[in-house]
Image 1 (cartoon, rainbow, N blue to C red):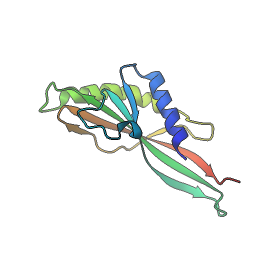
Image 2: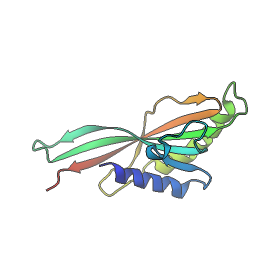
Image 3: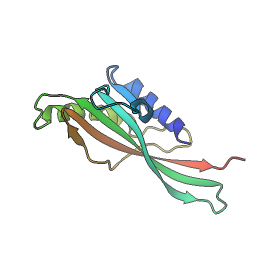
Image 4: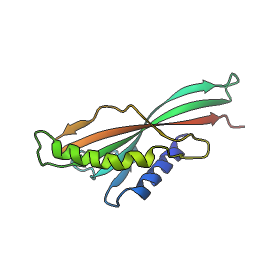
Length: 143
């Protein structure tokens, strides 16, 4: 149900970001440890959906999906404060945000909008900075 949107988001990021930035999905990260994950990277993760409207006959619903683009970098300069890693993550986020803002992953979807994201985190030189995007689309029952 959501695979095509993930595919389009991955393709968009890969086509617009520098070649050294990895674009990974949840499936790519399965079994990866923090130490073994490729960085710098953007982890594209489906978060959830919410129903905006459903027809009374149950044949169609408008939904809003939320996708996270989690910036993941590793920088061990200033490990106590994490300032170097945070700076690197913010720099990459400044490329990712405008790449996805307003993007239409398919003809039936509305453009992506930036929405509230979970909190950023820092761990042993790894900075994680999530950006959250919502996209509205319609689901219809098969004939």
